[in-house]
Length: 543
Image: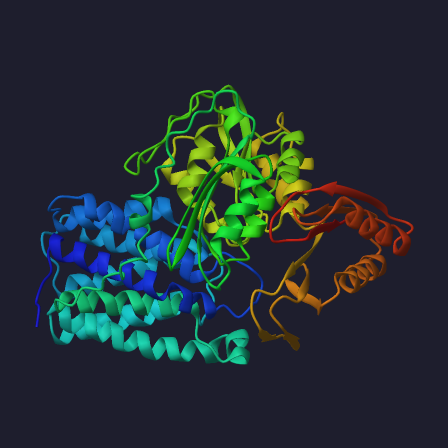
């Protein structure tokens, strides 16, 4: 039984944990009970911890403090989604406790696990039971008890694992949604997977991603970093990786994308499809791609705004920081050319491409913030699963970052209407935050999988309507949902309705939707705009 671990051990434990989460990410994704396409837990946790694994592989013989610091730093910047941010915070606390230590015994490891829990709980406004936080907290508490009995690292870690199993099994009873679906919490399961993989590595049974699953194998086959951007015909450099989840032929995707743009490179194996394409319509490209599987990574850059393209290496953690030319600036998260234009017209300085299915990392948000020539930068996440990643940015930049907790694009648009560049920070925070509650958001998307959710018998491919946070209806006919939403808006007495139609909706069909709202809501002002967003057929705001 191992009494202590050193830097080399910690490095192996983390790389093994990253591999295990990568192998199990789809199983973790499938634990998400709400059936809409989303930036799923397994994918977000995998991308977050693999940022650490990548940097650890490059490090030569790091001591314990250095290995822990590398992990925490990489995961902080690579954190995606709430589950990824919480995972990064657990490692940040662990790293903080291991500072100055050459070896870690059972007592120190128990204290490190507790420090991680404290860091994670501190960052969550309203911690809920039955989540990764619960599993981590109870596992750390058990580790502390075990350390009093035996100071061996392996003994303490094994105790943490056993308690994590019990805590995870109980999450189904702590969360009503999980109980109804009969599943455990996905984030908590991910933490257990990581702890178990660490133990395997400690015993010399390192977890390794099977050949063919590793993104690095694909990266060696195609280099997307150096393309000619002179005389640009297609404005958006669009890169993404999707996990293959069906038998659709990637060659059909190649043919589709070749008609949509140029500079197409498509590489695939049994597990993933990696794509690079220059196009004027990235939303359409992404919508077609998601029919093959879930997004692993997405990156969209407007090449016309980049006179000199600079590709940052993985080791470059901070881009150049723009000198302040004004007091306030704003960056916003959204996906779709039309939505980008809306935010830019309202005065947003920078756009971060992302949203559902493609949660930007803390590093992505940091880069956008640093490019804004302002002292204080407001961030509009426009998605509940991006807020926590955005909240980590302030500690990484000399600029002052203020996150306005917008959970939908319509909330972000309404907030921008209240933005006053000549006001004070306090006035803007109050005005933008209050504006969020003045708009109701409706969304129409599709069911990514079969589900029995909230009284609805949902089948893969059904249209789903969401009103605010709740599932509003499901149907095989999108017009049925549009009518029901219009009637809801009428009954709520709303006066201003804006309909943003997505990348796969033709204008003539969108106009019929707008006409339906105008007919059923005769006292309301109805506006129709092309949002160009992927995945969501319609985003509708009502005030």
